[in-house]
Amino acid sequence: MQPDKRQLSIWLALLLSAGFIGTSLLSYVMYRDAIRQSITAYELPLTSKNIYLDLQKELLRPNLIASMMANDPLLHDLMAQEENSAGQIVRYLSKVKAHYGVTTSFFISEKSRVYYHADGILKRVKPDEPHDAWYFSIRELAAPYETSLDPDFANGGVITIFADYRVVDEQGQFLGVTGVGLTVDSLRQRLRDYETRYRRIVYFTDATGKITLSGSDAGLDGKTIRDLTGLETQLASRQSPHDNALRYERDGRTHFLNIWPIPELNWHLVVDASDDEALSATRQTLYVNLLIGLAVMTLVLLLTNMAIGRYQRQLEELAATDKLSGLPNRRTFDLLARQVMRGARRSKEPLSIMLLDIDHFKDINDRYGHLAGDRMIREVAQAVKAMLRHADILSRWGGEEFIALCKGCDRENARLLAEKFRATIAAHPFAHDGQPIAVTVSCGVAQGDSGETFEQWFERADRALYAAKRTGRNRVCVAE
Image (cartoon, rainbow, N blue to C red; front, side, top):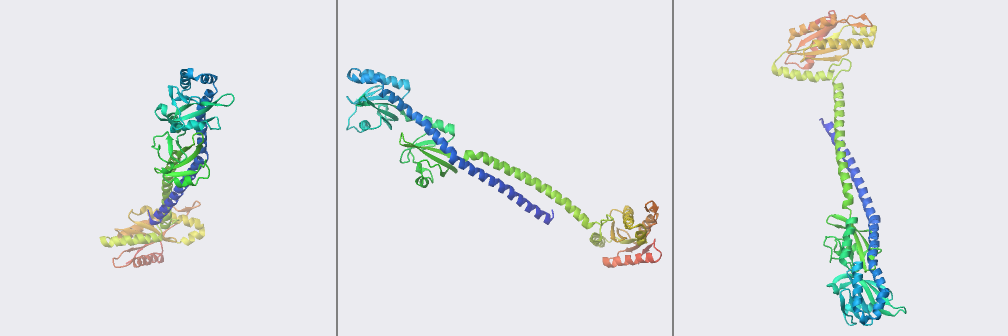
């Protein structure tokens, strides 16, 4: 590949590469930004809301059970005769626990302060007992119930979600507290279900930001949300409790958070999404586009090089060939002749040139027209070329004049070859529009001398040609 062609190919490859890579990367960035916008503006808020509404059902169910118990006439009847029906109260609580699948059910009588449990009488609550403070607090509660998260000491201190309901008579007099509890393990399983369904990390934090419960195995329990790299500043700058534009980097991935308050537990629901999965298809598309671009670029470069090579060969051929005769032009002959001369001098082999000129060519043009003259030039060139050896060089020197360079040919052999050219041309049946035309050539022959230049050599052959024309044309003259 020539320098200009190689340079053009390099520039073309750079432009195509920049175009394909730039377009593909721009598309990837646009898709990435659109996906991230979709995650933060639509997907995460919608997921958080759906989870919250579903959790409300989960948290509302214990309240409904507790409400049913607080208004159950059977329980009121048993409370009226509490001293004689303690065992019936326990059985009642046991049936509620078994029927509704809760982890605990209880009733505390205001009259006796006895803590009835599904498994029996647990204790008597006391105002000076810290673990019983919740009971004396709910006595003063204006609302009929509350949801709390406390250890269940009747069940080994397991953290339990309690639905506590005030029991009152028809006059509104406070009779005690009843309710049920669900262990957080049920919530943990629910979080795992959410993570599987939505393919997000879901967990709870308390008001201080401590992660209280998570469904994943990412080791988040007990940490604070601020332990996540780069998140503390963004948490501090949140504009609202439902701010869904929180973003941070973890493990080389971009994460987005949506934080939703759970007032029933005084917790916050946190939904954490990574854009890695959403972008995986986009990255694959990017890689495919780059491969397609590489293939297209390779094909374009191949076709371009083929086209350039073909046109370059055509240009080189046009630059080196005489258009009319199809022979090497004068410039090409000059280059070839000088190379042959150097080779002949080294090998000491004879070398001759002969000049051929069509006789009375101006008369042919004047009588038959220039198109006929052009055809004569082509036919003479073809006839002479057919008689030359492969190693010999024939060129159109100008106008109706030709020059032949014969390798390994001395003066006498060159004269005999020139006579053959002359006789063949004279006998060739040239014609125009069916009319025969007599065409002859005059030849000048000169054998090269190692001590002369090409110009001096050519000048001797040219003098021999003019001698042939002066002495009657259609003849061969040999230079001394």
